[in-house]
Image 1 (cartoon, rainbow, N blue to C red):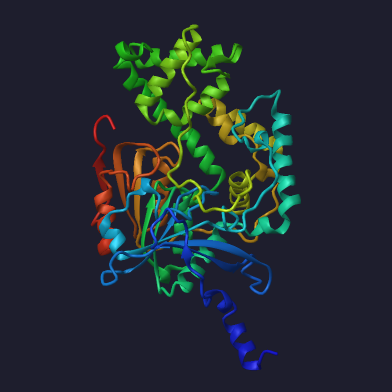
Image 2 (cartoon, rainbow, N blue to C red):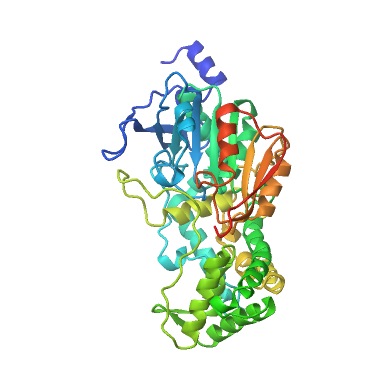
Length: 483
């Protein structure tokens, strides 16, 4: 029987059973460095009921290479939502500078509901996982049924768990990780969705925030429906830039001598594919398929020009080229030592966060119809995809309202000018919300994810992580020509 004193202490510190855990560290993978270790922590599913159901959080660490020079821990998140981050300390693509690895234990973790952290599943089929759905009057009823089916299947399979798969609770999990590791503060590097997670942590735990780098940022005032719509809004300027660049290289791509001619060539391809799908490497592509694929590609002008030239040749009956691949957020693949994860875990965990985090999702399908019609007219490349109905229309509300990010915590924001997933306007919104932040914009920078790619912003980010000194003012650096 617990003593009155212990019960009083537990009431004063209800999370003590979690923050005082002794993790059982073991080597993650025989093929990885011996210093790369993994452990599983317990956290409450519902932080308002710490004595209730528990879930697992899988954590990894790569110890600092210098015991003498060690500063603390650097938590890492690859984005998503739904992205596993357990092997981020050793993923080769990130290529952390030696001075960072000397000072920090690199800490990876799979966010709640993801990967090795009590993964959720809705039992979704491949078609149900497909959320690239353009608005058409004749298919809208099917899209409504798809959205309802995804929400219903997730509720039936995961129930009350879904209410607690929120960014705020993942931030609380991060703070449990901090406490278990014996650290007073954490430093952090988050990409894409990870920038929002980091910003929410700074709002909830400002006194425990050390050096935070937010790479390819989203606007915290526009999560999450506004994030989709921001992609559509910024596709227009990217398309215009691409048409200008491509017109200057007409002898190479044969798409038009002027920007107007290049744009006309593209929209003629769309119209032709709508009448009869274009055979692209054995996969017939409709105009909607091409719009969906090219939306992100237009942010990389050369790759987009090559792809449209291939499609034009295929439309003319010449040998088709292999189908292109979509833009990916930076991040790891599941580690070799991972246990089996449900095939729909990425989709299930992503919808859980996207839907449970915020409450402004319209509940009336007709609102989505009106918005999709409006936005297709405004942003013809992708507006109807962005504003069409999503499972969030039928999702049960999350356990608490979204976080308003508005603070004076130091942070460094890194942003490519031409980022297809988290456009520049989103990073500027993050910068406004974090009043003490500095922002480095890579002018002409293309693609999603900066730090670790030998970008011109890398040096400033490394200096901040290793010295704590933010740039004196916002900076703009130039991406190399022909990147």
